[in-house]
Image: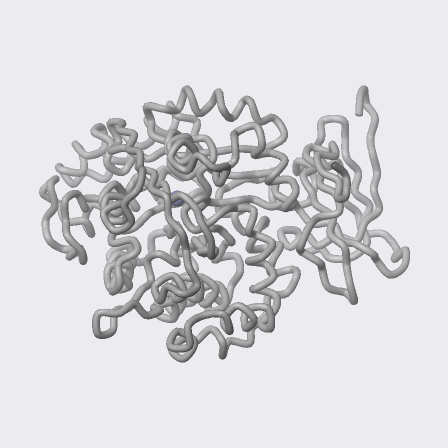
Length: 462
Ligand SMILES: [Zn+2]
């Protein structure tokens, strides 16, 4: 499109942010933004429907850690930077957030992002343990923390602030959130100071936290203690699946219900799933204690990159159906998604590449929209796992509208992205078209995807 040309499309749309569903005429200006989106008379039974393109709330795609993961895996498991846009487009996504960029690597990360023009890439800056922040934490000064964070955020150009494992250094599982840590404040105090400070900054995205005790059986107690310490203050829980395990007789069990009950009565809380996918992957995390434990268990190559915010470590891993812990982890993510009643509070993620690849999002959507497809996987799990799971008894199936909320409209709104996640006036014309069968969306692959009005993906084209 050039000059003042406009393009009009008449499409059947689902646009939850603007509470619209049905036939509409979308007019896209030469700026690549939607000029208007107006209801129009039905032009028959739709063959496909157009939705706002996906927004991946929590992924790792451009930070040092992912380069570490690529080196460590060495076998194509972690896609090359240049392949990211096409791989996201083919699952209907055009926006992605790298959730762990240290202040020191911001300059480099911006260069990587500039090399990906058809992907809208933002990032969160890891700041909870930054030296300029820990000094006012020691003084218990919310204003001091707020000012330090504001400076880090402004200097970085990040979309929000990521907090990893506050005051957890050197602790053995499970953490007591109320014991003083290395800064002289307890993890609970540290987290509350950060949450209050971020809340005072008047930014759209609340504290985005990777909590303590990730992956440890019994960690639901830590997660709930953290939520109680910051009750009433907005928070986003990253990769929540990894933080909701009960422990019974030394074995891992699902604690999804306890967290979901809290989220269902606390609208200020949101989460992304951190769903695990069976198969090989590489885990990458700023939680060096977690990574050291994983590596000690599984051996093999690993990589650690250090910065002043702590560092990032990459460790190869394989999720197996026959492994009791992995089988329960798989179920826990889906249980969380099905038990949180409001899709505006729960977003699809795998914490790429930690739980698996973002390329698995169509599979996750399939499990959320079809109880039968979940059962088909459950039947492949060890019998003793099948017997203790709640998942097989859950009958909820996400509607197509709920999928659009959880994969696009919800994360966009939670991130404060006013131009993404919807098809209203002034939005970027980022959209995906999916085939409809018997009135239901076939989420397996989009028919086409546009980014700023330009076609970036067409099905069945090489
Ligand atoms: Zn992550």
